Length: 199
Image 1 (tube, rainbow, N blue to C red):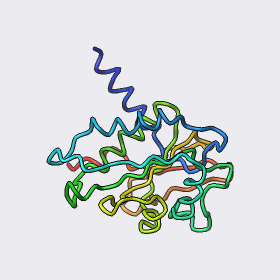
Image 2 (cartoon, one colour):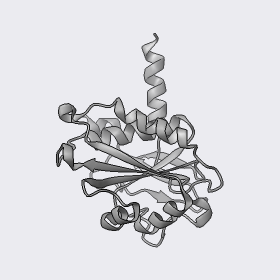
Image 3 (cartoon, rainbow, N blue to C red):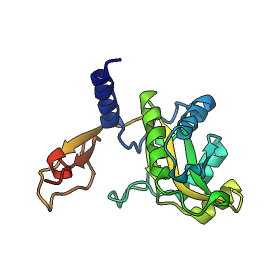
Image 4 (tube, rainbow, N blue to C red):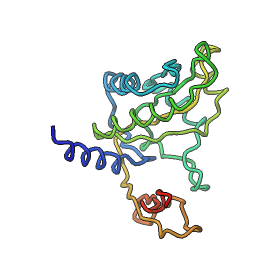
């Protein structure tokens, strides 16, 4: 096994796994693909090995339409209400904490979300991890049991926008806000490697 090739492949996949907020509305994601993405969560590390997270798969049109108004899409785009009707996600995964197994998932949520979105990207599918949503109304709309508490919503679909990483300038007051240029390209500033390493 050539570990260098594997590392480079992982690095490339991570770099390409950018948040997508506009999707090809006419391209569905197969139900089996959604199940395969959730399966990736099984193989991630879990605090105490409690594995308290579960997923509600949403691909039916009626459910997608019901939850869309409950989601906030881009905090830095204050005038943008989210994707147009023909650029909305093909599916959603709602990550829920099953409180029967405890009231804290420790670091499991982030680990599982990264695995799911990397898996999606490897299949050409884009994703947007959403934390800002109306949890009570989402639970009601999906008829979730009382012990299932929504933590994140992952929007999934084939990308209809280009997202590019930009190096930040390294200063303490550098602007880290993502932005969209007139050509429709979404730009995401990232801190340089030397800023991440404490000397």
